Length: 164
Image (tube, rainbow, N blue to C red; front, side):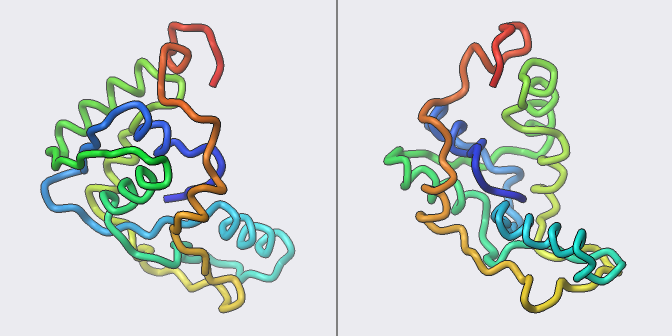
């Protein structure tokens, strides 16, 4: 999971006071800041990376519900987190993929969150030590990446003609 400028999650928190987890037993995630990811991509372009698949995950492991609460806290919003079955999240994802320019949730996200994302599938080498992501999912990181205030609205729908 990549986080950074744009704050899709912040738009969700500003739109709805209720956030549904993927499944009744959350799996951990390791969100990575876009800045850490771009450092790794630049190293790959410069030839400083091994010529093989590498595991790229964030420095901190946490549950999505905890990440949502951190974003809500930075925004000064209250959010209720409720467990929701995976099949219902897939249905929501399908509807938002059909109707929104940038879906509230995508089927690929549901699949990823249902399984958890903390380790890369083997075989994958680690990135070199000097490129290991070190930035945590902190209030400062969240605050620095917040988009313009506001939630999802009419302009986010495919039928609106507006841009997001």
